[in-house]
Image 1 (cartoon, rainbow, N blue to C red):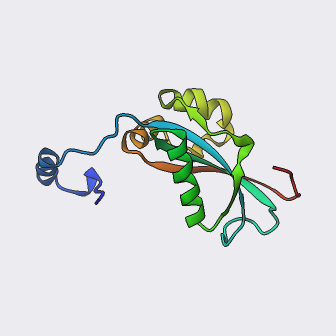
Image 2 (image 1 turned 60 degrees about the vertical axis):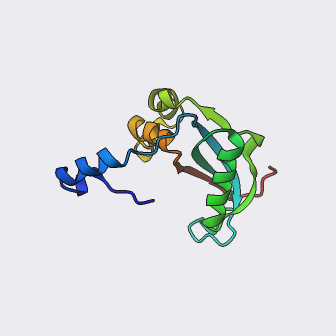
Length: 143
């Protein structure tokens, strides 16, 4: 599948493409927050002094099992070692309240690092995902 940004092509070509190739939209997807406890593994981005970290992964999927599978696969592809799901819970997030009901309530100091309401709605409609905050610690902890 190719992705083309509308502003990158002339209007005449855009009209021809959109009339013959409708976009793929998924109607049954929901937004899930997957807080995954990881070890460094072969990942070089995780600071050396961190013993472990929680990576908050946001996935648009049909159910929490699919969301978790996507999150774990992506984290492993980045070299992280999967340890567990933080507190054993994947959270359903109301995508229609993403900005005001989630980002501004939980992460207001870091809001600039999150996708906008429109970006999240597009993400849910197309089954996409993104990696959110990474919270690390430097002492051994029981998980």
